[in-house]
Amino acid sequence: MEGRKDSKRARALGLVLWVGFVLIFVPGAEGWSKEGHVFTCRIAQSLLKPDAAHVVKHLLPEYANGDLSSLCTWPDQIRHWYKYRWTSSLHFIDTPDNECSFDYARDCHDQHGQENMCVAGAIQNFTSQLLHYKEGTSDRRYNLTEALLFLSHFMGDIHQPMHCAFTSDEGGNTIELRWFRHKSNLHHVWDREIILTAAKDYYEKDMDLLLEDIEGNFTDGVWSDDTSSWRDCKDILSCPIKYATESIKIACKWGYKGVENGATLADDYFNSRMPIVMKRIAQGGVRLAMILNHVFSDDQEGFVSPT
Ligand SMILES: [Zn+2]
Picture (cartoon, rainbow, N blue to C red):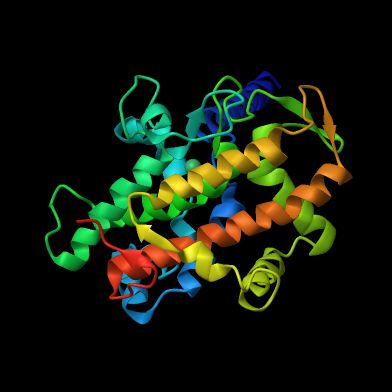
């Protein structure tokens, strides 16, 4: 009897340790949820020109089976590993509280003040690394597979409005609230809750149908006239600044507006914000494709290379 009890206890302890391990190593609210990143990357990959599609497949590890979206959350998975700890500030931008603006020189740094260590700087950096691929001048220090995965992930993050948000509440992470009946926080509402509620209420949790609807909106729907302006990018160094500025404006106008600690957010908030979330995912995908088409093929649409 004792022996059985002990092994039960050991199993219980094992479970506790395992849960503890998962809680420590699975990151919390960090960028679009898995779903948001998968959508962004699937949209982007479907819009690649043949040359770029070929290079992307070539750079992906074999186990990805040519599917970029299967590795788009990789940067969230490794950001706490010792080797990659330097990347953890690259997922977001902290802007001054209530300013509702992004100033690269003022805001793009990590907590130690290291310049360029924010999501806009990261997109510039990894885009430049990938440009060398086409020019055949790639530096051996650069791992272009990693550069592709980082760029693809950060193009999602920069479009999540609460990733370019206020400093003191950590992009809404410390604003605790209820999403309908369960506990959540404002950051997580934008990362995941709105997407999951949309999937549950309108698509019977079928993520493929939800993605089809997002794609339908820009191929032949409400946003089809806007996509060429989304793709517009005269200067590779300034475009991420535009995307971050859009995000902080949306964070102020739609994210924070009317939300206080302890609030309950439900139908009104969901219905008015859901179209914005879907549009930001679409923009992230369309623009990621634009950048990859530019760096991996001769597509120069709306684009001038830096000198
Ligand atoms: Zn992220």
